[in-house]
Structures are given as C-alpha cells and as structure tokens.
Image (cartoon, rainbow, N blue to C red; front, side, top):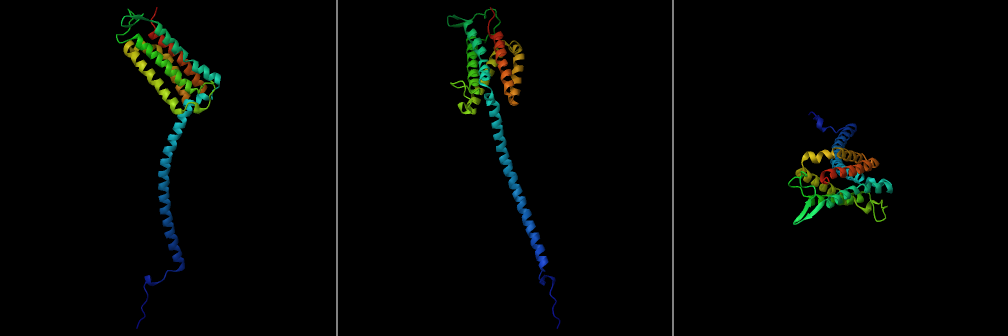
Amino acid sequence: GDVPHPGPSACPPSPSRRHHNGLRHHHQHFHHQHHRVAELSEMEEATEGGMDSDWKMDKTNEKSLLGVRGLSLSWRIIYFLTNLPYWHIALRAMTAMEPRRGGVRDKGAEGGGFGDCYSAAASTAFLFAVAAFSSAFHFAQCGLGPSLGCGNPDCYSFSSVNCLKRCDVVCACLYGAYLIACRGVLRTSIPFIVPLLFLFGSIICKLRLWFRSYAILHGIWHIIGAIALSSIVIPED
C-alpha cells in the first residue's frame, strides 16, 4: 500500500526555525517585561518626584526664610534694629492716653474724628503686640543669640522661625483690619501706599534669594510703616 505522507505538523522544525521562534518568544517576553518595568518606573518617579518636589520646596522656603543669616553680623543687627520704631510708636500711643474713671481716654478723641469702635487702649495693645512679634520673628530669623553671633541654623529651627513669622503676619493683619473698621478704609490705607511698595519689593527679593536687598527694603518698610501708623493712631496735639 501507499506509505502515508506526514502532514506539515508532523515535520520537526528545523534548527533555524526553532532558533527564530525562540528569539521571537524571548523578544515578546522582553518587550512585556520592559513595558512593565517602564510602568513601574513611571509610578515610582511620580511618587519620588512628588516627594522630591515637596522636599525642594521646603528647602527653598527654608533658604528664603533663613538666608538672611548669611549676611554679616553688623548687617543683621542693623536690620533687626529697624523694629525699634514700632516700640517707639507703641510707647507714644500709651503716653497719649489719659486716665479717666472707669477706663482710659484718648487725648485726641474729643473732636478728633475717631470712630465709635476705636479704643486707644486696644490700639496700644495691638501696637505692643506687633512690636513684640515682629522683633521676636526677626531676631530668630537673623539667628541672633546671646552672643549676637549665632549663625548656626540650629539656634532657631526653620519651623520655629516660620511659626513666629505667621504670628507676626496674623497680628499685623488683625491690627490692620481693626484700624480699617474703626478709622475707615481711606484714612488707614492711604498712608500705607508707599510703605506697602517696599514690603512687596522685599518679599520679591526674598523669593529671589537677594538677601541684602531684602534686608534693606524690609528694614525701610519697618521704618516708614511705623511712621504711617503714627499718622493714623497718634492724636495730633
């Protein structure tokens, strides 16, 4: 009889075909693994990138807040002393009050145009709080210690200085809101037009890490800001 002819499937693959199939399988497996690794890498990079960006942001904030410590000791002391006008205005406001039965009276209250909600005692308390928080914040920001030469960031940590900064800003904003409510928007805001320009300029310099320019502009803000406060809260003789 006829000898059956083996079908195509019965023919053993040649060595070259086996090698080709092996290479194709290996390539598919490698491509799948590479794709999986790429997906995992992207996830890890996204996670690490987020952490890294947060870390970089924290370090940038820390550097911008504490970078003034890189200035010389004389620069830092002069910069810190620009807080003195706040204390001067607070003391002047306190001496401008006269005692009366049941409380205190502002010497300029009669016919002076003070709003019904304005209190010389409350305003003076605000002034002392602003002076205290501003002085404490900038003392720590400059890294001034008992020896007036502490340049080590461990003297005052970033978190503690940042907390003092927030207290300083909140106290100043509350006092500003109080003055606007009791003295009027125009009477309170007009004297601060120029001082606020120096404040915003100093903030820009700090963010750009120009610490000497920041110290100059922010120190000027302290001085002329205190003068603006004086024109608002100190009664005219």
